[in-house]
Length: 570
Image 1 (cartoon, rainbow, N blue to C red):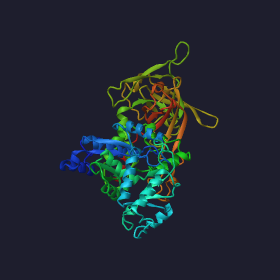
Image 2 (tube, helix red, strand yellow):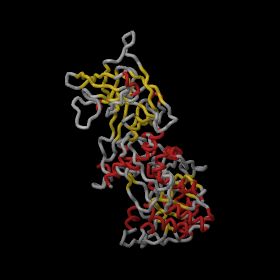
Image 3 (tube, rainbow, N blue to C red):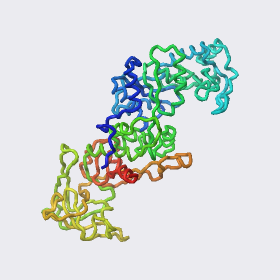
């Protein structure tokens, strides 16, 4: 395999980037008193995906590298879409990725009372007002780029009237959507985020933590920066789509009586992969319409899906470190991520033999015992040639074997070096065999391949030094265990889903999953732990399903597609 070039002496260690340079400079200048505190603030309305993994590695990584702290804060400000299930899943996924948030786990809802008090402060200062307009009118009044906004007819209410209305909103006197609280900033600002943004809306929805205590809920922009300030965050790291929100983030903080340092927001490019979507809305659509089997479907970029498919968390961390932190959005090749997965699994996974599309191979000169049954011999096979401590295992071998149907051709095409009439091949860790005959079904389909074996070639070695051009895997027919194998292609056929039509779902690959039943595997695979990844010799890396025995998901193939892409580009 051609490995990606390292960005540091250790490719798994983050290289310098503009965020780390910023933090280092702040420390040198004594900003924030030398403190470094970050936070990871996901909304508990879905499962984490590969894009979140980059943010997790950055948020927790920066804090660790500078001796600081990184809080996990669940941004639970929208009770209509949030559930405790998602919050629990976020905690589990972060732990699986290799990070431990400090206790206690924070929630934006922990600060609802303080946020409300600060809202009253802005109202009293004449910097916020209650607007009776509906959503459509507010949106229309904000204008657009190059188009001036229109002041709300309720913008000049007195602070006393606004305070009374806000308190009545909280008390539940008005129906949902009847009124909102807006910040009074600048309806002609070039930055649309500053055109009197909504801070509170009336919404009688049951909150999974606060129950029915509140009927008004803060917007993300109102809760985000203030939650950072309450927790003592120094560096609020966000993805680039929040770049235009930063002036609003700063405006709120500048006009509040904060208890300590004012946090600073800095944006970085989010992680995007080819043939992949990471929009929570799109992912939820795939789950709800049954395109995939659930949030942990191995075709999804959710951390649950990647885990079920067998991606090692270390490979994801190494990949995140390798691609680095920049200010420019780009789409990374999924083959690059797979190269990190392959490299990690190559050193850690044990080798096993499995036949996905079995064809019977009969050794006509194989010895039989006194009862006439084929002799059973045990072959010594290496568990992992990359790991000297992995040891060996004993694999049963008899006169009837399963081989891959694709490993035999009655009329071999050019450059086909596997089994065909008159050709000799090596069976992994066993013997040299030569094809002598075939048995066909009535329709002409090959039912059995007959061959002879060379007893002198035990262990797959030739005593006379003769060479063969192919080594094949196999499974003893009388010892084989049935298994189901799931093979995966890209979920989206286009590199940039939706780029051509505007709808990513138009690029769904209808053949993204193939389920093969009746695969034959060696007995050692029955001892594979749930979730464990093994290499099926010559076929790729496969993960044992966490809940369904003898179901194996193909994690990644053996062929380094990223190296091939790099060669073509060169």
